[in-house]
Image (tube, rainbow, N blue to C red; front, top):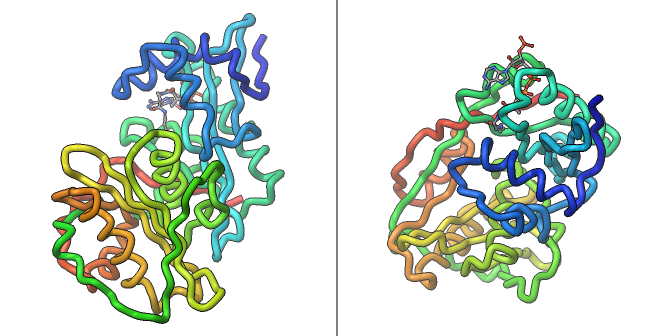
Length: 282
Ligand SMILES: CC(C)(COP(=O)(O)OP(=O)(O)OC[C@H]1O[C@@H](n2cnc3c(N)ncnc32)[C@H](O)[C@@H]1OP(=O)(O)O)[C@@H](O)C(=O)NCCC(=O)NCCS
């Protein structure tokens, strides 16, 4: 008998087994680590479903919603895992179907997930398909030109206790990355800054820049539709925080079709990301 239900902290004990077999690169060894992955500003409780077989949790799916100017709302499946001893029995399919219907109930226009190359067939069988690709870009922070303008004011977000609504958003940034990077600062204890950018009273952009160790800072920047003319300002002001963080390299993960826009600001090294962006229209 198989049950899919809302997840809760009490499930983290069983989920440790799941994480040890499915998230092996991240080295989960304690229940507390699994609990930490299920709380904080980027985590939405309604977007957590677990699957139980004979009173034991053997898998889960995590998802959330963010705003997008084209699709209205996007549903993002941020993680899915089934205990290796229970894989290839149709459980993953049922979890994705359950997440899809919960997201449809939230009126999303499009679904998004990111798959490692070796799991792509699984998604294809569920009618999710690759859409575009992602690039990791990097440069030295000192090579990012300062974009001076009095038209745009920078608001530093301090004492953040929940995810600012402006960060549950993607327009040209890859869905989910703003929220993920903001959580890494607020919950994950990484040094960094969160910003909103305004033209008069109108929000035109958002940005996060965080220290990822090894003298590397990671940033994610995005603009609203009306913020399009200020793309360079938003990216420059966000990415240059890397100087403050004493990073030698500043990096971002962006949709490949946005490489040119970033290239107009400065020269970046770029590398194709192996993970595959997936989408499904609702
Ligand atoms: C991906 C995952 C959730 C699939 O769960 P599952 O319960 O094994 O999936 P299902 O049994 O519902 O599989 C559905 C179909 O996809 C296929 N499939 C499942 N995993 C696959 C994989 N890794 N590679 C290729 N095909 C796969 C199954 O064979 C099945 O095909 P069939 O219908 O022709 O028999 C599970 O393998 C897992 O937890 N992997 C590790 C974590 C991971 O990679 N997560 C993805 C992050 S986006």
